[in-house]
Length: 165
Image 1: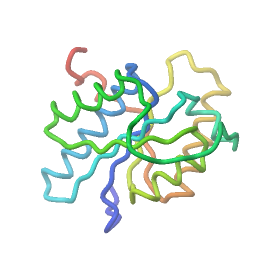
Image 2: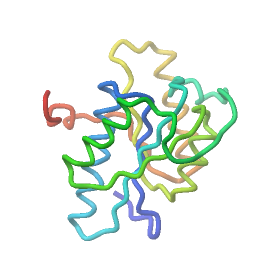
Image 3: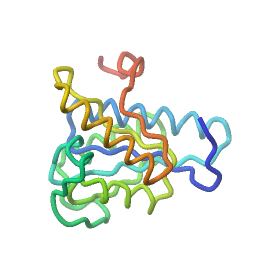
Image 4: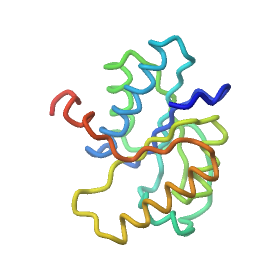
């Protein structure tokens, strides 16, 4: 992975406590733990998007409402439980922030504010159609261009290594 100097944050966007969010957070935790084990600064931030709007649609510029950032307050209990569980299992402190809406602007502002250099997105559903996949690619391209972060949305082999699978 490219070293981005003073920007050691790994950020993981989740909307709920479903399997896709769990896999994304597990993968982000593994990446953060590897950084820590190599002696690099390691910080993991779970960004909870509320309400749970699509991660794909913002790629073409739609906005689902005003952006506000802050600590967790309105996130569902299963999301806070997921964050606590993954943090405990990996021996990490996972910072949690909440943004309202999931527009490109909201996501990019969260990444910039935290100095994120790696962004993890939940993988798409297996049955996602061509339009959904195109929207996701567009979101990734625009998010990468706006933030200079590396954006990851496919988790590959990590899915088989998640406990309980």
